[in-house]
Image 1 (cartoon, rainbow, N blue to C red):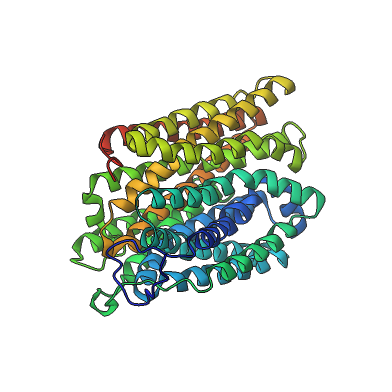
Image 2 (tube, rainbow, N blue to C red):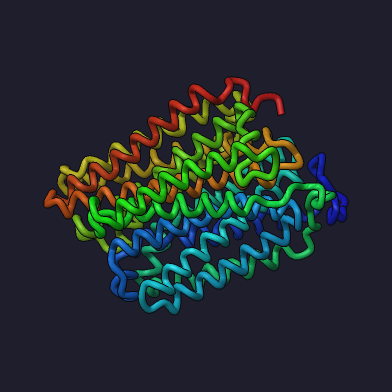
Amino acid sequence: MANLNMSNSTNSEAVPFKNDNRLILGIVLGVITFWLFAQSIVNVGPAVQHSVGITPASFNLAVSLTALFSGCFIVVAGGLADRFGRVRFTYLGFILSIIGCLCLIFAQGEVLFIIGRIIQGLSAACIMPSTLALVKTYFQGKERQRALSFWSIGSWGGSGTCVLAGGAIATYLGWQWIFIISIICAVLGMLLLKGTPETKIEDPSSLPKFDYVGLFVFVITLVSLNLVITKGSTFGWTSVVTLSLATVCFVFLILFFVIETRKASGAFIDFSLFKNVPYRGATLSNFLLNSVAGTLIVASTYTQQGRGFTPFENGLLTIGYLVSVLCMIRVGEKILQKVGAKKPMLLGPLITGSGIALMTLTFLPDTLYIISVLGGYILFGLGLGFYATPSIDTAISSAPEDKVGIASGIYKMASSLGGAFGVAISASTYSAIIASGQSIAIAAALGLWISVGFCLLCFTSILILVPSNAGKNK
């Protein structure tokens, strides 16, 4: 296939690229640097807290801030990638990943650790929409769906591997090695992307200026809400600090909608994209299903604190999740090609929710609970695997060509924000119930039932919003 120079193109049609497999591998490594390594930290919380010297509340805040900043800035990065180059912004994401990892490796105290986690979130904001846009540019039809499957393997498979890999690395090498290996993967990803033709919008000067005011208001809204959720019990739910943060969140949320709805063009979130029903359904359900990310941190913390597992032993419980999600992503691709997107998207949250429900059986004795958790993780991965490729394909295939970066950014923003608030709500519920004097088993069960609720909401949103013909005849 021809190696075309795409440095200044609207890319109205997907363009073949002779180094496609190398490009896919580079893209997957980019996704893995965040999902595998940045998220591996959920399984090593106790070790990190002791080594760095931070409280559990600050650790939970740092974990959720990564996804929060990724979500806030992913649309910015997607829009800038459309203007200045998607390959260029993928490289920027790799560089930020390396910087964030170095901050975590050398952190001694809360400040540098939290800064490193924020930088990792900004890295993901650059990598996720840029790599999705590259997939849409250089692949079409079944080849695009294949590339998206590998992208999903990096994303969902990385999240599936994070508990196992993080636990093994932390137990036998030290948790800092998680981020040393991440740096190596980032460097390899940059080398694999070398020589990939640049792709961006033909005339970026014709696009409206970016809505930095809307971004600022949005960030203040979400950061204040996140602080209320993660630090509310520490500050006191009726304290001046908590009530002030809640007030700021409410006021800025209203201000955000007023600002964005009055903009004729160039809004931070282009609400016109949501007029497309398949895109709306895919993005909302993506937010809700990613909110089950709290499952990993609650289940991992409970098995270590409540059952006495080591990080590696806890990671072994998730092997079924890893295997099933990696296998089912390609199955989800094939089902998409045969019956369309809606059916596998509906199966996803139903199966995932069933798996999480098995993990809530914390009253069981050790052997039976281990069996329950093993089965739960298998179903957890099966459900996510069914959902992943059909959802991504529905979202980016429905996007206008000149807004694919922004549309991909909003879609991934939904992922990140869903994960951020899922972790914050589930982990905070778990901690608050323990602080109230209830047993750790009850706290874990209730924290996990929140994720089951997110699955039910996800199923409902797909049932109502995603058309039956979505994904067919492409």
